[in-house]
Image (tube, rainbow, N blue to C red):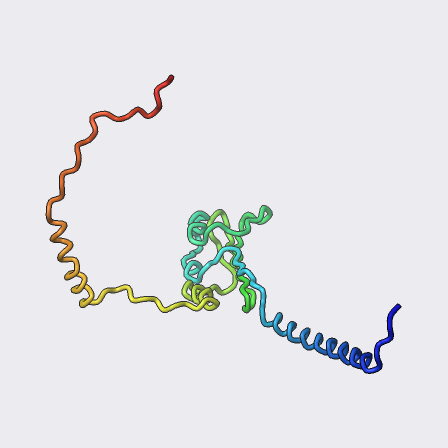
Length: 186
């Protein structure tokens, strides 16, 4: 059925198979290195209520619940079993950074704030800087006009003002009657 291979061909075939198998492992290593250099996109997950240091400093014992809610927002957890306590929890997971979790608990007595306990909170500026670390923040452009640019702007506006000073044609007279809104019944 099969014809025997010539004597030199069988050793060439064996060498070829060995070369292909050796190349496969090299390709496999290269593909593994390539795949490890490409990381899949991971969504940034921010959950809960961010509470800043400034908000915590605004809280004073004796504040009613509504005033605490106005400052901190609606609590993430309001336990049915612990009606005298509100929990504010904030977690953030970002690619390349350690997951962060912060917690603040407000305790009430007779519907007024008794005390606040929890983790040290970052200031609003620190939190914004933390968010901007992953995305390179571009330089903010200067938003104020210099005296020279205001003068050049005033010069370029002068011809337009003189053109606007000439009287325009009077508007056309208003229509005496209007067409019907609906087609007449047939």
